[in-house]
Length: 239
Image (cartoon, rainbow, N blue to C red; front, side):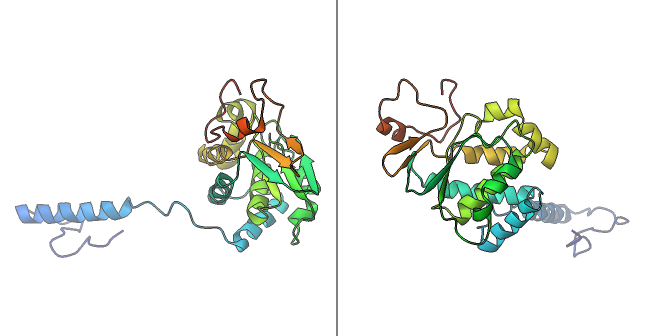
């Protein structure tokens, strides 16, 4: 900005000589320091999402387009706050629709969720068993849609973590490259993988049916062992 460039004692014009007095130099240094301090103040980390924001993002996705990087960051942040409050083993009541691996098949997901994407609350709950990203061409859109619906209908949408909701795996099987291609940098990918750490690990329907992504470890003998896991981390090599 030009504020202070030609001000008193500032020596601001290009044709002017620098201040010769020690006081003038110190004044100029203080002016520069003030300007720099203003310039480096970071923007707010997170602006809460309102219903209109989510509807706007859903409209963008229904049109077959990606949400902006800023919108994706806001979705990840808002969803992470919701997901972090949920249990490792999330209780769900029937009726429920259980959905397996999606792997970026966005338009199949849109077709499946057509009632939930409308203006009315869904008549059934949904459990998604993980592997939302990688392999398919529309992983960004798939994840964005799921996060929108989780925020809009938090009690109806349960998102479980699969082995592809991982920093390491997504760098091999396509999601990382898709983020680079669609956003031009890795920031969008970083927002998403931080969100992955908050996904639940399992769901129990009506206290009777256990839902997980890819089976149980032979070391896991009880559901309480799953409840005791610290899920806020990258998936270990051993699973």
